[in-house]
Each structure stands twice: as C-alpha cells, then as structure tokens.
Length: 205
Ligand code: TYD
Image 1 (tube, rainbow, N blue to C red):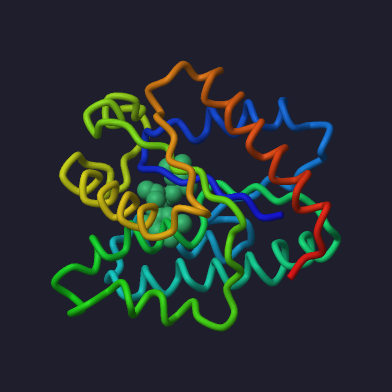
Image 2 (cartoon, rainbow, N blue to C red):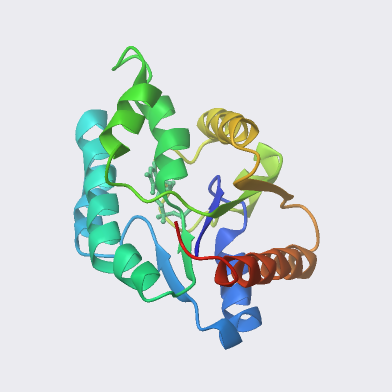
C-alpha cells in the first residue's frame, strides 16, 4: 500500500512523519521522500538553489520521481510493504503550475502527461491544510528559504492542492493541520492501519 503525505511548506509534515515512525513501527513501513530518495534528488536541490529555469526544475523533479519509483517504490510494493512518502506526484501538480505560470500555457496537463504510463498512483494521500500565515510562521527563519516559501506562492500552491483533493475524494484525506499534533498523527496512523487491513484482505490490482 502506498501512502503519501502532502502539504505546503510549514504544514507540519516533518513532525507528523517522525511521529508516524513511532506509531506505525509494528507495521515496519518503508519511509521515503521526494525529492531526494536517490542521488537524482541532489540535482533537484541544486537546480532549486541556483534558480535554474522552471522547465529544467520541473523535469528534474519528474526525473527524481522516476528514479524513486524504479529503485524504491515498485520493489517495496512488490514485496507487499507499506510505503509512506513525504511528498510525491501531487507536490508536482500543486507547486509546478505556480512556478510554470506564464512559462507554459497550461502546465497541469503537461505535468500529468509526463507522469502518464509509468508513475504509480498512491492508494491514499493525506493533505495537511492550514492558513498560509500559520505555515509561514512555522518555517525556520534560520534555514535558508527556497524561493517558493513565501505567502503568496504558498497560498496558490494550497489552492491547487485543494482542487486536486476535491477532484479525487476517494484517495485524498484532507486534514486540519492546526489540530493538536498528537491528534493529527493518531488520526492518520489509524486511517493507515485501516487501509492496510483492507488492502491485505484483497489482492493488489
Ligand atoms: P523539501 O526540501 O523536501 O521541503 P519540505 O521539507 O517542505 O518537504 O522540498 C523542497 C521543496 O520542493 C518544497 O518547497 C516543495 C517543493 N517541491 C516541488 O516544487 N515540486 C515537487 O515535485 C516536490 C516533490 C517538491
């Protein structure tokens, strides 16, 4: 079963993932992330840091995804493991249309077409949602900020996430990230357990 965790910068994914590692330890999940599950992620980080052109950046995020699927996601799913990824394809579908706005006429279908035929669809996606001001105030000011970490851009990214979630309500679970951390983690851990139980009772398609 493939579970993905999505949300804008500052939505609390890192804290949540640390807690899920503890709460779900008995299920022995494979925890992974995008970008950066393989060395291809280093080229993505470099492109972002050097503000390479947005097309290059988008394609590198896609290349990172392809390497991630080939080296980690598919083998783990084939072994019947539970895989939990911190960011995945919905990060592309939420962030890159904002970054590519004005560069491509219609970025989302272009991004989707790049994924068609080889990407693996998540079984369940948890989307952490919170007011953008709260997300920005949670960002560590000492950490160098990626250029999309500003309120105007994050607001548009979150809008894109919510549109994706509304279009695919059986896969997405929208979670209020302002709730108590322990409540958020406990709820998501329970949902994942329920999903794992039902996926084990039916053969993988
Ligand atoms: P990362 O450094 O992992 O940040 P976080 O800890 O918030 O997950 O991710 C780098 C940034 O890259 C983050 O702001 C989201 C963005 N991103 C995209 O724009 N497109 C993508 O496809 C992915 C996976 C991330």
